Length: 326
Image (tube, rainbow, N blue to C red; front, side, top):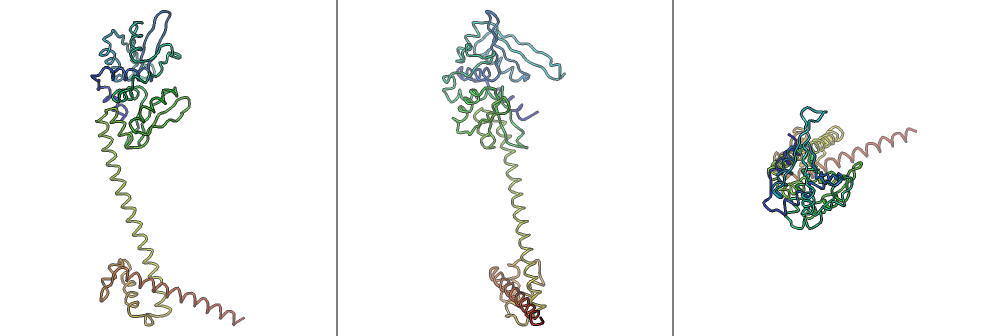
């Protein structure tokens, strides 16, 4: 089962005791998936969905809020034996008008049967805003598997509906954004913590905990990876520095000799060559008397400067010899 389906099943099981919240959720279902069908003198309210969970939730909301007669039919989809379409219709014209009046949706504003967004009075209360977002997600929402990526979105073909939904979501300090995708407008959230906040707003608490568990595991994995990468980088840096030190010391030994070095420099030079994998701190403890890590580093830098000095002067001598021979 997809993560989106789990969220919708959890949301479908929540039926508010407050009538105004049920109306807000019904209004969202109408705006993001309902149809208004006018046939001569008749007026029908229709919802068609392949999601049994959504169909059951809409039926329950209408029944509990208005206590009306509702026609329900199931149609087998031709392209899939396992897929069915659920159709819920309210045929009584007076009852349809009563429902739309309660949800503040004007039937005269419906375009091609698509019901428009409700008036602001429907989402005036914070609890009603939650219910409205919940209804919108049931009809038009989806969420990616958080193990792969963080992405939650609502899809509609109406920019006004997208903007209203975005504004309602933003009242909860959640940074929802809108992008156009072909002919549709997508209200989306990509930040993991913001998706957690929205699940909390919709009261999908089980899904919220599942997402938080995934986020914790991801963060722990990322932290371990960062630590391993950091340690690997430090090891690489240490090895590179040690290799450079040894090259410089061997150059001094072969071209100048350790006997010309100060006692402290000679001691650290011999130890560095003898223990190439030792850290600076470990080298410092091998000396008598022991010295600090910074002290070891200071002596090694002096050895590198000496090696560099003799390299440069060797090149100068070679060039001078070439000049004299000419």
